[in-house]
Image 1 (cartoon, rainbow, N blue to C red):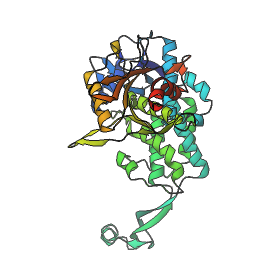
Image 2: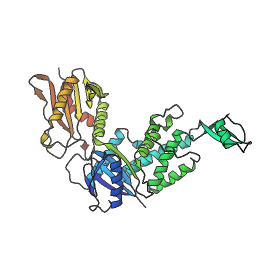
Image 3: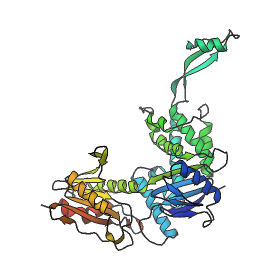
Image 4: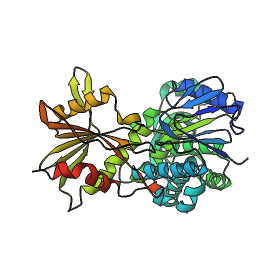
Length: 417
């Protein structure tokens, strides 16, 4: 049965009776997954799911639900869904969360494939690369009952098992084969895909890979497996595939009753994605010889008070000033930010010794206007500003958004005497 794709937007509510694709069985599976994840990605209601700020895709049975970002009030139609579908994929690519140039026929797939299909394709492509070079072999200890001594005898087990079989020896020895953690993780992820995908192209590729992974055991892979992996020159080639396998394995929730309502969710916090996207676009202009910016930094958390910390999103340094940008992925009504956001920017100015702090919102179809920097009478050199950036140009994400932000918001401050 071919997968069906249902596209919704963040913060939208999906009801069982209002959409023919979204059936009661899908709701019940998402209800279980929602409670299992403490409603991190969406909220569960009476036969309805209300999505939060997480975007990406969820697969349940033969239905793929794409949750798209939306930062405007444009009419919800197929054109707006395509616009934000492509924008999300571009953002994921820019933020190194998916490798678009590694995907065959990428332009065609951007128009038709779901986000999950792109991830599945990328994962299978990476595993196929590893297989062509040969799966990594390594030594591992095994205990066996043999008719000859190999390695060392485990006397307790030898006495227990071979009291009436003097010809045997229970031994522990080193075995050199493919059944190691690297391949076990890949095998686990491939087995998950074999259970949830209905794409005929993927099914053929999965079967071919599984045929060549005989002897690799299916283990209960947990988050700790990935924390304890160490790479060397022979296993570095596994890194990309294991990153994707981690997403597939840890976001998979099997239907333990043996039904078809398995759930796999690959979701991203849109607030973090927007912040990282803007940071990367500004980082590009740091190398422009015509722009006098010394550095663009993505700030880490710093101690502020007891166990509490403070963290600005982006810090821009030039010879004349420091500028803090705090990205906000939300619609700002009446151009009026919250008191807490404004106070936060004032603290940033003091803590980072910055001359200008900017609350940067995505520009929407509302009447949004960049406000001039506000100067407090007691802190004439510390400014705060509310600003909006138009992410699109001709219905596509603007590749030069870093330059737009610089010339519209930063240039005067950077070039001041």
